[in-house]
Each structure stands twice: as C-alpha cells, then as structure tokens.
Image 1 (spheres, rainbow, N blue to C red):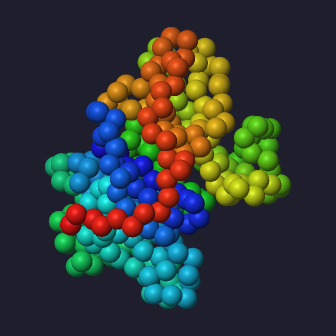
Image 2 (cartoon, rainbow, N blue to C red):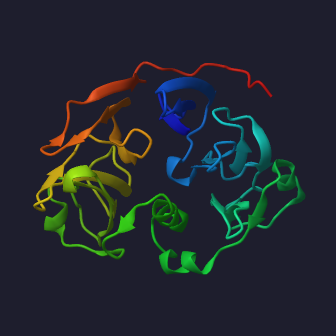
Length: 276
C-alpha cells in the first residue's frame, strides 16, 4: 500500500490509496487544510496513517494537530491538537522494534487517547539528534534511511554554482543533503534536499529535486519531478509531475518509456464519509 496526497486547489488536501501490486486506486477523504507530506507516514502494515496539519491560525485551539487514521481515509482514530499560541504536537514516524512490535516515534508525551490505536508512542531516539536544528524535519531524514535511501553527503552548505538550474538564490546561506537509491543495470536515483532563499515565489525555502545517475556517473536532472522513489514491488521507478503519477522500468540505457498511472490534475474537494 501507498498513500498519495493531492494538495490543492487552494489549501485543500485529499488522499488516495494506491495498491502497487495491481496499480489500483481508492479515493479517501479531503480536508480544507494543507497536509504536510514530509511529516506524514504510513505504518509498515498499511493499517495506520499519521498526518500533520498546521492551519496557520496561531490564536485558535488546535491550530496545529496530528491525527492517526485508517488509510486511505482521514477520519481520526486518535487526535492530538494544540492550545492557542503553542506549537502543538511534534512530528512522528512508525517503526518496528527489535522484537517486531509496531511503535510510533514522536516528540510528544503519550496521552491516553493514543492508546485507542493500540500503538505505543515513544520519544526521540539518539539517532534523531545529529539532524536537529535543520530547516528540514529531523524525522524526514530518519524516514528516508528507514525506507532505503542512503545519505551520500552531510547536511552542509553548498556553493551557489552547485544549485545552478535548480534554485535561484537571492542570498544567504544554502544547505543541501543528497540521498541515493540503487536501480537495476548500475543506475541510481538521487534525491537532494535543499534549503535556502530563492527568488521563485512558488518555491518554499526548503524543497527537493531529483536526478538519475548513470553507471558512468553522469547526472540527468529531472526538473519536472515533484516526487520520486523506487517501487520495490514492481521493480521500477515511480514519480509525479504536474499532479500526474508515472512509472517506468529501468533498462540499460536508462528509463523505458513512461507509463501514466493516475492523473489527478482535475480532482477537486469532495465531501466523503469514512466507512468507520
């Protein structure tokens, strides 16, 4: 299972369940808020989805909240909100401990309500702390490693010319970290996380870019990819571009002709009732 998050138009967000074995899709629910995709996580058994919302209404109750739902739906099985003018719940991710027990790591206390989902919430682990203080959420980098991405660099400053064609700097310090995953025939999928000021009004101060790296080390930037990963079920590369989900097999010369899996360009908010 996978969860696709469609953001927009406006601040709306919708979820779609994706069965990667059959490439079938199930529409979930919409909310009139932006779900922070880099703070969301799906449990390894596909039974729970944790997501994070910041409504930007600082003075209101629950302006920031985290919920656990039954994917692909968003109706909360457990909910933890914020008091007015507080930052609210920390981020979280699922993992299995050495005994195979499913747990949820979060920078929060463990209120009784979370026991309703039958998953123990645990605090920070030592491997979180080297990533603290970054513009990106530390849990994001831990999740990437959990999911097979290998860090190839540290989170470090980079020269402006390295970001040429990717970012348009307007000054200040720029940081980036590079992660990679191996592909068949010696190819590599590269994911770079950037942080810095940019003149692009449609770009936040932190974002990702993707590239394919050939067996000889040649880098092929994929400037229109919004997200990409390796689908271990289909042994292929999957990515989104302009709200369309694509996939492609990897052959010796690179990617095969792209196949369109799902077009979400014209999807809009729709009131839907969860079946629980």
